Picture 1 (tube, rainbow over the protein chains, first blue to last red):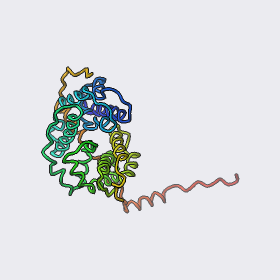
Picture 2: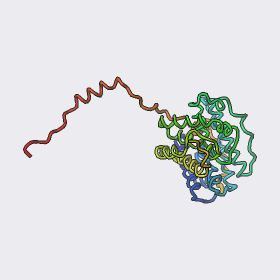
Picture 3: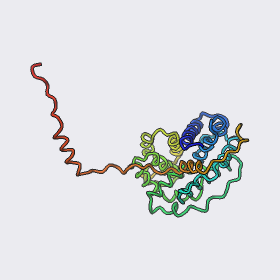
Picture 4: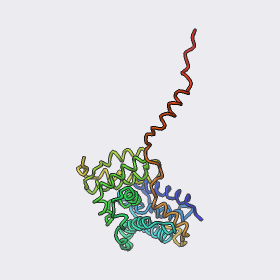
Length: 242
Length: 61
């Protein structure tokens, strides 16, 4: 049986590959090569599921080609892990988050791989639409950071457009708690909002620089930072309200 | 080419749950920022009083 540590190591390795492709270290069939060269195919497939929509970031942001073998590899990851949050201890909000992450992945798979996309989950549940408890809500949005990608749009994005203030509060809270991986993911949402031209109560650029220095060396965090870089450099400057 | 495409791999429920928790990472279980603790002032004062004196420059050198 493959352990969680094996999955984590495979996810880090795959994140490094995606990061390399995003930075221009192009090659052929990124995802398929990752699975072919892995000693543990299950762990390699798990890595694709963990990264989710970020698997497509070299193709979305850097224009890297997406091969048919890559599409087949992503589809295989869904075969291997059809319901990732299936444990008896999984909470409803975790299932909601996982469902939306899968929605994002399948949307992009449909676009790049020519496969049919499944319908969206039945709207954001109450735990996503209600921002009253902004502390918990912002953590869930951090878990959904892979959706903060150009080219994806749906009910969660519409929700984020109307929740710049709770997101900014979440960023501030995460930085104060020194939970920099969460802060990095929330800054990614702010950068996405800035990219969309939404007025923000907090300038994401200096916070991005701050969490870049303190966010740790995890490859997944580095990938979040790289996507945020792309979003910020392409954003509309007047979008930020100071 | 996807060389392993012929082998169908299905994760066990435990393995699926493991990557589920990686997909939905909770926030770090760190404490809130440090807060001032007035009751610690006495302890710090005691440490200062009990600490050895500064070494003096030896005379005659």
